[in-house]
Length: 93
Image (cartoon, rainbow, N blue to C red; front, side):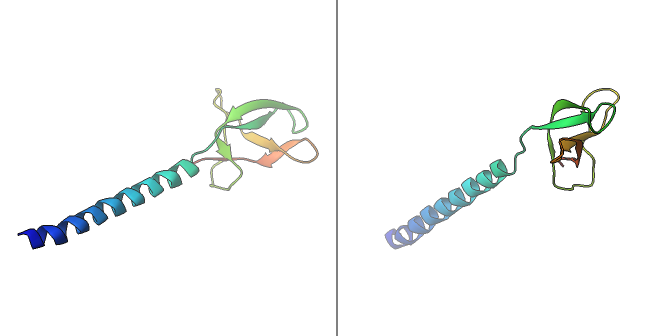
């Protein structure tokens, strides 16, 4: 009986430690993938005249355009080097 405990107890401790290490790493990866609200711009009425809005969007192409939260929703852009709001922003999925 004592021999079995001497073998099983270290194996059990190692298993719990491994599971804990994997679960904390997974949490760190999920935190890294969280998005941050960025400054976007609504064309008002042209790309040279922009209104600033805060949106949860990305410059990575997800296939869906970033839209404002107002009604009716308007497409949100990012400014380019010429200070015109014409760079595509995409919805975070």
